[in-house]
Structures are given as C-alpha cells and as structure tokens.
Image (cartoon, rainbow, N blue to C red; front, top):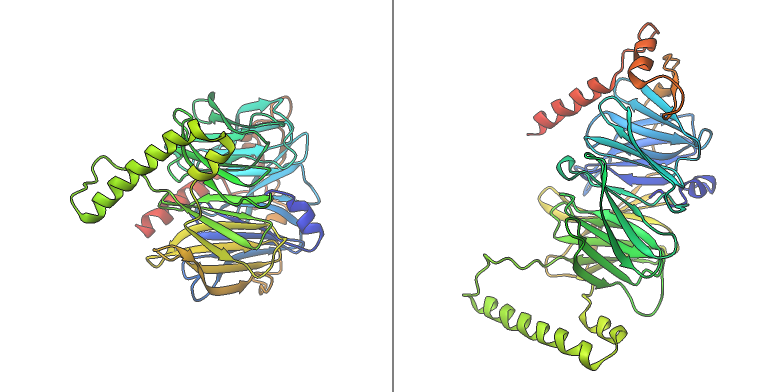
Length: 422
C-alpha cells in the first residue's frame, strides 16, 4: 500500500499495511500511527500501540517484534527505525529523494526511491548494497520475500513493459528477469516461502504466478474481461494455497493455486475424475493454439476466480490478505478510508461472507507523548558517500540520555516473542 499513500493522507485518508505474517495491521494518518493485533479480529480489534503528533505516510512492522520503520509527510526523505515498546528511536537515515516504500524481513531492510533501492543489513542497519539507475518507479513498486532463506527483492525492470527483476538480497546479485506482461507492472507479491512471485500489469485483467528459481510461468488467472482496473494489492495466503487481488473496484478476487503432486493418487473416484479432467484440459490447451488466435486461446485457458468478496464502496485502494484466524481461513481487507473488513472464505468457493467491520478511525490515545520524538541524541546517518557509519552513530549517541535502544535488543525481543508463541 505504498501507492499514492501521501495523497491518501493529504486527503484525510489512511495508510494501511499488514505485516509479513499477517499478525498485525499498521495504520498511518495525519494524527500519527497505530498498530493492531489481528489474533482475535473475528470479534475485536486489539490496539497494540499508537503514536500521536506527526503525519505518518509509511509504517512497516517487522513480524511481531517491537521494530517499526516509519516515514512522515514532514520529512519524506528520512527513515526512522524505532523500538516502539521501549519508546526509543534506534536510528534514522536520510536519502537523496522521497522514500516511496520500505520493506522488511529478518535479514534485510529495503528502501525504495524513484530511481534507486538501498539494501540494509537489518542487524546493524549498514547499507550493504545500492541498486542505482533503476527504471523510473514513481509508485515505489517493489516486494521483499519475508523468508530469510529465500531473501529475494523484486522490482520493475522496465517502465514501458512488465518486466520483473529478481535480486538476491543476501548474496547481492541479480537472479533473473521475468517478462511477465506486455504492459507496465502494477503489483508484485512473493509467496511466504519466497519461491513464487505473483504479478499484475496496469491493465489489471490478468494475474500471473512465476517460479522465482527459473522464471517459468506456473499459473495464469483472468480477473476480468470487460474493463481494465487499477490493481492495488496482491497477496499470497499464509498457506500459499490462495492468491487474493484487490483493485479500485468493489470486488476482491481470490484465486486457488491448485498444484499437482506426483504423490497424489488417483485410486478414488474423485481422483479418476480429476485425472480425466486434467487430460481433457491438456488436450484442449494443446489444440486451441492451432485453431484460434492467441488472444482467444488465453481466455479459454486462463483460470477464473475461486471466490470473491464484495466491498461496500468502490473507487478506493484496499490492501488484502488471506490468513488463518483461530483455525479458520479469513480474508482481511483494509481500506484507505479507515475500515477493516473481515470475510469468511468458503472452502468450496463462491461469495465470501462479511463477518465483521472494524473502524480504524476510532482510536483511544494510549499516551500523550510520542516516544520516537523524544530527544534521544541519535544523529542522522546518510547513505554511502557521507556521514558516519551506523555503529559509530550508536557509539556516539551512547552518552546521550534515553539512547539505550539498539537494533540488537529489538532482535532479541523478537526472538523471545517467537519462543513464547511456540
């Protein structure tokens, strides 16, 4: 949801963003930002933290840890990394241009500018690599796989066609380039394991899923035929069996990723039917290109939505995810006008049922002072080319009051929270 987030905030709207494992929701506004737990979202929306006093246009939380990265409208070139539970600012970095997107996982923090990407080591915030002179990326479109074992970064490889550039953010080299669409890209998303990437173009009619390893196309779905739309978000489910897609229309589409496994037997009657249907589908797919134009063939061979949800209002940007809440599949949709919708995802497909609607605009103040605005004495650190290193900045600030926060302590807190959850 980095798309036009500043315009949303200026218009009195909200920046909404789910964290990597869909356990919490971050909401930014002119009044500050809030974090909500999604563990009991069927019944209630529990507020974890809120901050007042600064217009926040980007908020990213690292899983269920205390680490958050924020960017304000007043300082759009400055990234602040904070430990919200301790009420301390760990560090801040200033860049040469406006920050359009920030992505996090347990190994890397990526900052996206219009024509460059900065990759930081999450443990000490040092810049380990800079990708310069990227094609103009005015919306800050990029994706970072949440799995550190497959730590890939995806971004547009062209401003005129839908090329996806995949970069290995750990080994710091380009992995592959995927020619995904004829039109420029509008959305990119990685699966939870980081082995698959989903894409949509500015036309918004076709959704494709590719293998990150070799760039081969795994799935192709048609969102619609009648009209082109602006895709706002793509997201794999936590179980990687579903893919959801939101746009500026009132409909959220859900596609089922039906993978064929060599271990699955065909002894049952259903298995035999699936075998014959698969045979017929392959036969039709191989015949159609010989008999019909490719545009017509695509319409026949592309998959359709497995389920859909109808939103109350069209014309807004929405961020959507599919996760498991208390052992039940749920579609969560957060909108730029400050609402969170909870839908039940039917296992047999069809229309999703609205279970709950939460108002994100009604937030009771938890504290009157914004912790990260306290004078903790951490100097600004610039990207390579000027300024002290991250370690030196922390060392220089160690004598200042309230400067006890460190990225290492935030990481330790995250590990402790993981152990408690296990």
